[in-house]
Each structure stands twice: as structure tokens, then as C-alpha cells.
Image 1 (cartoon, one colour):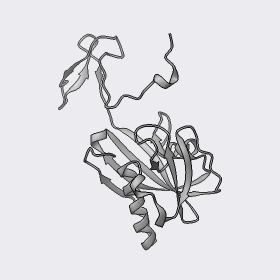
Image 2 (tube, helix red, strand yellow):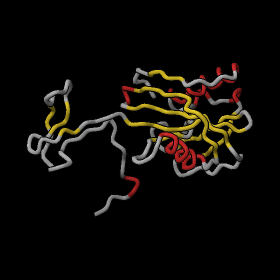
Image 3 (spheres, helix red, strand yellow):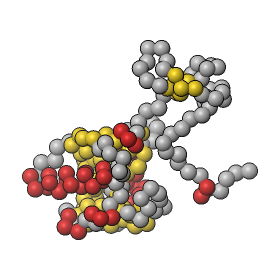
Image 4 (cartoon, helix red, strand yellow):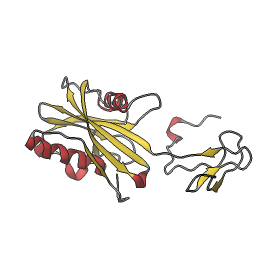
Length: 195
């Protein structure tokens, strides 16, 4: 019997109990020539490494207004965010950022430079945001967004933004608008009080 679509979920943090190679229950060991605990199979010897997930997105602008999407999914349902999501296998960070913008906002963009790289170790993630220029004001939000809209810098809904990585990226942008210089910002968010 197949589960209905609404009953599927995305487990986080990641937990793996069985070997993907032979199905045997996993144990945690420090493999030879390693320095930390790993999920490993005592039967076939497979070591199951876990690596950070990449989140890719854009800070897209139309006539000095920032594009935001209102989330239709958890976590942070009904809050505003920059178009972003998990990078897929087989795509670059730039391709993923453009795909996420199309999926979440239905916006046509011209991708610019990489803008923020944010390490989020407590969430096992790295967030990459690119600058982008919106080519048309027409927006067609997808199923992961309740709506998409453009916000003047003076009207950003700060109290209803989704993640700290979104907040800090927008704050960097506002500061950089003042100087006209948009360098790459690389920093960490270490607290588990929201990414």
C-alpha cells in the first residue's frame, strides 16, 4: 500500500539505522584512519558518511525592491523568505538557486554574483545566496509558496521573516546598497535558535 502524499516527511536531523548496501543494522565506530564516530556496517564494511546539505537561493531585486516568498510549508509556515531550497544532485549552486527561484516565485531572473555563504553547523547546512536582477514584475508562485511579492527596503517584514540566514543576507544587502559595493559575505550562524 502506498502512503498518501501528505503523509511523507523530511527527517531532520538525519538518522540512518540500516546499511544501504546490505540492510544490516548499523553501529557507530571510529573507522581506521578517521577521527570521529561514523555509522558503519559490521557485516559488509560500508561506512556511511554524512555531509552538510547545501541550501541555495537568491536575493532578487526588481526596481530596488526585494523579492520575498511566503512559505506554504514547514518549517516556518506563513513566514517570508528569500527564494531558496536544497540543492539537487547534478546541479551547480547557481543552477539550484535559479531553479528554486522559478519553483517558489515563478520569477524570471538574471543571476548575478555569489553574495552570502553562511555556515550553519547546528543544522548541518551551508547556505549560498546569489544576487539577481528580476527581469519582469510577473510572479507565479509554486506550491511551496502562499504568495510572492516585492518589498521596498523600508517595508521589509522583519518580524515575520523565516530564517536568520535570510535576515542576515537582507541586512548585508541593505548596508551594501549604501556603499554601492557588494562583496561576498562569508560567516557562521552557530546558535540553534533558527537558521
